Length: 365
Image (cartoon, rainbow, N blue to C red):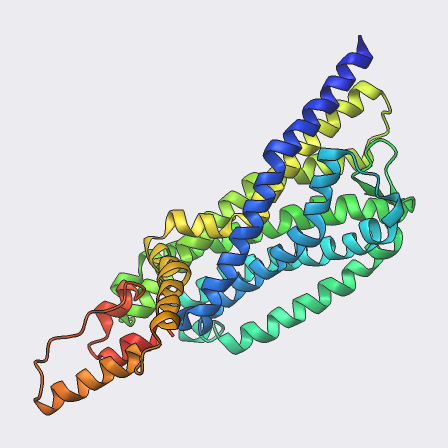
């Protein structure tokens, strides 16, 4: 009876991984790719330090999803024995997990801290919201967390006997550090820091309308603040259960087959939630920000459609040249001063601020 129950639990685990975890992982990878494309395509985001932190977080999440999480999901769904590629699956993969996971959550904390500085009324604190500082800080944390992950490449060199999708270490000192330092401290300390800065940023964002900020900058700050606040809430709700269950599994000494089967099923469910925490950013931004939806539509749909149209008809003049010529003619009195129609990818903040068509068009390049 117990053997049938254990078998059914492992079957449920395999089916859940196949039909739930794998699709979520694939959607997360696609979402991170879209996120990187949008942040790199728009000049508004490229020149903003908070957006740079969010883009860096998406890059770290993408690397982890492709080179680590996807292999775990496939192993859980189809019970693949990775002993033939032990170095890659355990040592190199754990190097990627430890460095990219901590780099991503650090970038999320830096993004919300940057929004706090950007929306603060003190000019001295506003100076910390700077794209050059963002470049230096992101490079520094990437190097620090890669160095921190080197011991994972050394000590995590065995597959677990109870779960062949999990790698373990036999070093008791490093095992305690991994459990209490990595999961229970880093996994909960960084979200707590992000929540604190998030509350302060939300309070500052509510007062932006009373300050003499530029309209475009004010709308961008509101947009980014709302995006990172919702992402922090989702991260806390989805990653902490995985942190607790994984830490408990690491310290568990009970080898009862029924208990291990139940624990492995719980770990699979919480791992699926953790995938959501690492690959949900694009879908969160789409849901909470109408402005980001327009920007993503322009970059992913309108821009590609216009590019394909240009390749088919090969026009002699670009849209920028045509509009510039119309503006010059209007200034010379040859045309009416009616504004030319704008592309749908232009943000509402740019529409409200800029009266000159040349400046509006530059916002989308």
